[in-house]
Length: 312
Image 1 (cartoon, rainbow, N blue to C red):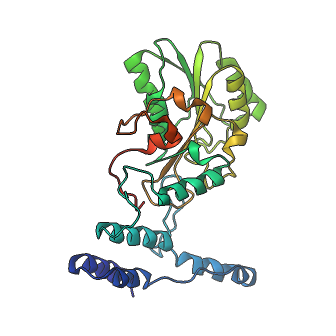
Image 2 (image 1 turned 90 degrees about the vertical axis):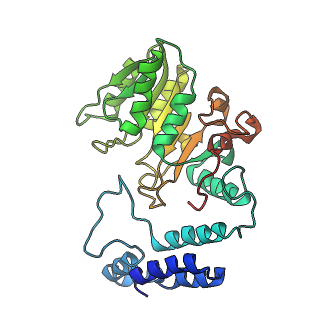
Image 3 (image 1 turned 90 degrees about the horizontal axis):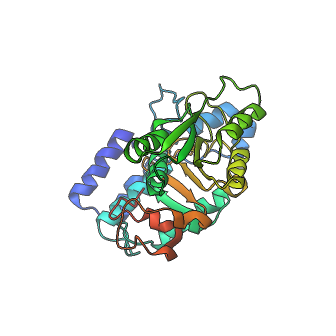
């Protein structure tokens, strides 16, 4: 079955009310098997040609910009579609499935993400992207007029504009570390942060990998420097997940936001926010729902957004 026919049949299934089994058959109709490791050893070019079949990308196109959007593979698209068909038929057995409470499926996802990132499930919140993660932290912190937030001159708007708005609205002060292009060494970067993190600083917010140049900042050392001085560390890790091995416990940050839809090729609208358990009580939720003040929920409080598309 060609892709165009697959989409047409899937739409027809929604209109004609086909059974769950029939829909599942349609969704599995064009599912090429994953190439084996043995094939890679025997013929790498053939292996990657077979791997290419796992994606809907036009054969004439090569996506070199996973930093904006990764290309979601067919098995993931089918999993999302199958769940969407099931939930829209109100056949989802795990109540509630539309976003008000944490069901077993969501717990499993958070558990897997926590293992992947080297932290605990109680420190993982599911959001829509790194921009939402960074805004959740920025807007949830109580900062006073004159408090200083240190950031850099190479931040993505998604991790910077929330602080700029807080500066305009509440009178905090932003202090920018000017990153060298290119830096001479890691020590040069750390020296710049050392000078910037003065006693009036409350938060340091920076990119793990900058969006402008791809510079990998020494996140572990910066976060340790901040912790020693009683400064909260907020890391925009939009470009790190899927590119770098990540253990957030070892990095030692207080908050870390990231976007699996980039280098991990996850569906669009999937984001992760790590909130270190010891500092969660310092953050207000941005969207207050029925469990807004139930601190027993730990990080899940910050995922409780009301009705949403859990198929993602």
